[in-house]
Each structure stands twice: as C-alpha cells, then as structure tokens.
Length: 68
Image (tube, rainbow, N blue to C red; front, top):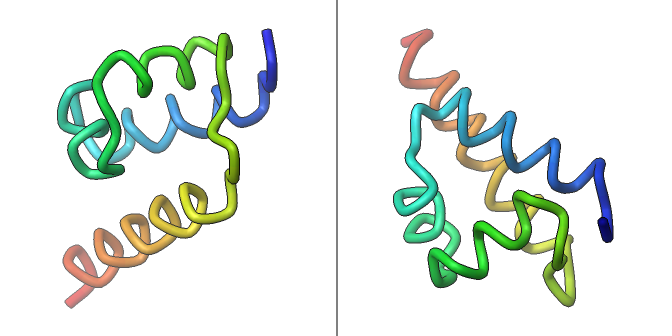
C-alpha cells in the first residue's frame, strides 16, 4: 500500500458521487487501470493536489445542485 488515506478518500468520493470506477476515471482524466491502482492503494498520482482539487470541486458542484 502506498497511501491508504488517499485511496480511502478516492473511494469515498466515488461512492458519494455514485460513480463507477470507469466514470471516476473519466472524470479525473485517467485510465481505468490507473484509477483502480490509486483506489486500491497500489499506486498514487505524482501530484495529489490537482486530483484532490478536482474531487473538492465535484463535491461542491453536487452540493450546489442539491441545495438550489
């Protein structure tokens, strides 16, 4: 395992968003294989910052959609 907290964060985000692994990979602009490796903690992106930012923006957009 490389980074359990990042893997957990990805998995939680995907579940909350209702995405399949393939949909999450498309959203993050990575291959499905790469996404699976990240989510399983076997690999991590070179820079997690942009991925975390994309996840945060996705969460905000969902909140705005649900709250008005």
